[in-house]
Image (cartoon, rainbow, N blue to C red; front, side):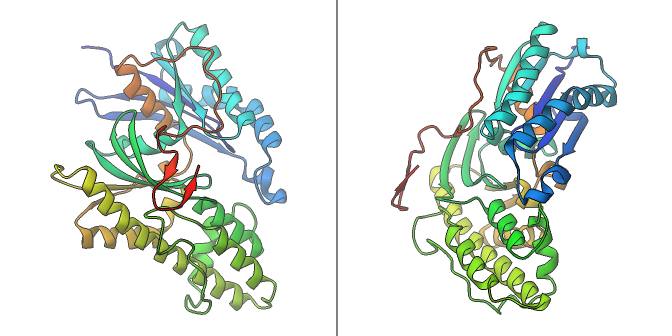
Length: 358
């Protein structure tokens, strides 16, 4: 029997220290042997957001233990690892450097290939961890640091159809929660509060709603929330604002996703079945999931979501990219730098129709 590749993935781009071991079965389907994630929520709670220096220090303190725990849970020995894959960007440079340096050192110590992984590519390929997903497909990546529509054509081949011109959706959720007095990370709590509120109470702005193609903007929405919060006095008003915020986000995503569907179909006119993937931490929001699933039914797209535990930052998705690259012998040099900014589509410098450059 041919030995199947065993890949160690390491993730430290922001405030999760994570390690994972994956392999594959005889049909080439990935198998997650371990997926360990250590969150830093308690560390950053009092500051209302991630403090880079504290995050990096926590990574340094935990990474050796997290990798060892992932190895132990997988039942494999470090000598059996065929390649080490670490997130190299985008993210907080002081945090990226911890996982990247550890991965390089370990790969050198066991004399195995090292693979530098784009964090966004991890999200892009994460649905392939639990479904036999063929290319091409449309990806909506919505997280604390990223919001974009990507035409995923193959490993390493991506066309960005739209992105946020200012804030990421996850950041808008967290900032709104902070303004409402919810402790960090407050984004997931917005959905809970919204259930108690009237979504029609506040008429909130929808920036670039009628222009900019499928590009997104949330800064103006956030500013409006800030102004309203200054005059809020009751819990019910907080519930109403949370509900109104979530309703506005749903309306924005509904319209922009319809436009992204049209753009995707223009590029992939020969595709027999259109597939739509939603990944990133905000993809765990049930209201957003349900709305996008219904939209997919209307537009005849197949909706695919990674499991909730694979929506946020994790190392299994980094190991997944590592596995794909290992099979193609796409290895990285040990001097590969950390890249705090690293676009999947290197040609996406101008946002058509949005009137802005990134």
